[in-house]
Image (cartoon, rainbow, N blue to C red):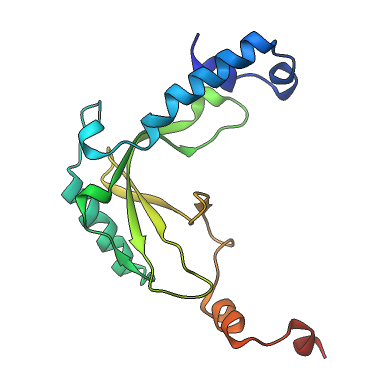
Length: 165
């Protein structure tokens, strides 16, 4: 049985799995995880981009968008995702945009509020940046990132109630 069967289930169908079926799902999920975090020497498919190209693409994107931090250029720190989901089609999961991608880490300078690194996602096939992940692994999109003003406000120690008066 493939993991895809479970992805196509409705919430109600998933909740009604027997213990045996649920244990099978857990087993398949554990087997699937390494596909998404492979080190260079563990890649099991043919790649289009080299690790060096992925880093250069990420660096160019980083510079063009004047992002914080420094792109980690150590090839050993790269991860490869054989099945990164770029887009989910909730109406028909078979139309999800899933393809191989490089995960390039950006190291941030020490800061009491923004102390974790983030990740730039480079599509292997397209040789282009397709998105970013925050330190928790959530996709970053317009509207859910801190602006410079937000960071200044956080760092200032001002009380929000003072601003409302």
